[in-house]
Amino acid sequence: MQKSRYLKNLDTVLAALIGWFVLSLFFRYSGVGISPDSIMYTSAAHSLKTHGNLFTFNHVPIVDFPVFYPVFLGIISIITQVDPVKFGAVLNGIMFASLIFTSGWITERFVPASRIYKWLILAAILLSPPLLQVYSYLWSETLFILEILLFLVAFRRYLLTHTIKALVIAALIAAVSCITRYAAVTIVGTGGLLLLLDRVLPLKKKIGHILLYGVICISLLVSNLVFNAFITGTTTGPREPSITPFSKNLYYFGTVMCDWMGLTPNQYWAATPLAIIIFLGFIAALAYNYYYRRVDRFENLAITFALVYGAFIVLSSTFSRYERINHRLLSPLFITALWGYTSWALLVLRKINKTTTRRIVGAIMVLLMLGFITSEFLIDKDRYSDQVADEYGNPGFTDESWIDSEFAIYLRSGDKSLFKPGVKIYTDAHEAVYFFSGLSSYLVPHRFFTKDIDKFYQAKHYYLIWLNVLENPELINLKDIQKVKKLKLIKDFGEEGGIYEYTEE
Image (cartoon, rainbow, N blue to C red):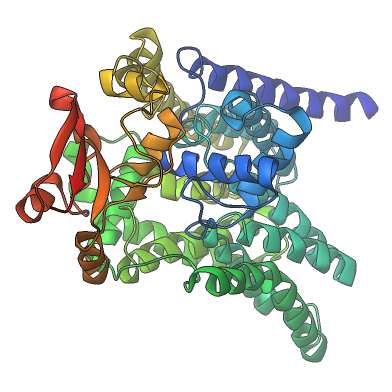
């Protein structure tokens, strides 16, 4: 018996190590990927280490994002005395391996259980293109996705025991998740829905548990939002109403699902029907488990989270404006959706009495899963060829285009002789300016905020660092400014952009 348990853990550990190795392949050329969000996180982490606060490179508190991930990076940086960008590849490798191990541990506890199913699931996770993409960057999703699995483990423990201790532990994980990603309110919602569906507790006791759970879950988030409002006047930074209707967001959700299933853009005509089928499938599975199975199964917890998270992303994108629904936004859904749409096969096989029929059906299911894993491998292979073999790197501020950029080379040189002390610096890419030069700058106003534009045009003296490659259509552009103000070009980088100065005459 002891050997059997050891072997169960051994294959999970082996899968975790293979996953770490696969992920490390994408770090070979330029290290961990750095995006604008990454710079927000790392600058706040650096501020925590050097000044004991969570100010970004703009000398303002981090508001657009919750505080825990930069705190997490800052604590590691304090302990190791190493910059987050330098230890990012190792950190993400450890978290990705932990994610795979936890996934394997959970899959072992499915009812019914299957060793072959577990191996196929682990292979699909460690080769998952969306997960490999996320864990190739310094993004808060790397921590959030792991927190989701830890919550599922903790909440299932509560459903099995119904003790206050187990409920508090699950609620604390949800609370920390809420200050890792604002989307973690879906974890809170998942627990709340499961509490409502649980038929074990009497009503009075259930209400008490729901209230306790809710208060603990939102405690840290409310504290974070109140602090943001007190310091900056906004809870989550400036937000705009969405310009994308529900039908379009449902379509975008479906296109991501098409990509995950190995379909090509030529099959995007099926995106909306596929999205509808997926949501209806989650609802049907949740209803089936409620009426015919126990709600404390891991499969049921996974289905519940997948439904709540998927619906939240589609609906929130309809009311609030942020990046279009993509692989990164939906990556926290991957593992739970994978479980939700494959675990039913174990039930089907168990109900087939004839051995020959069961083997045939099982073989067909294995072949379908192997086809899915093969499609994942081919996507990963193409990405490796583009980013590593062709020596480009993870797209972002550490890729080949920035390594060779004349503009970036100048900013990295540390030459600040062009800038007079005390004069504001504006730019269309303040993250890039900070990452390459260490200079703090202010982002030119967004077209939506007219008061900010008026205030910008009232400035009497400033510098403008303009990077053409990062021009954002949602911000006022160089031509807009030149129509109103006479800018002096003081450093020209040709097609890459330039540095300008404005002085009121």
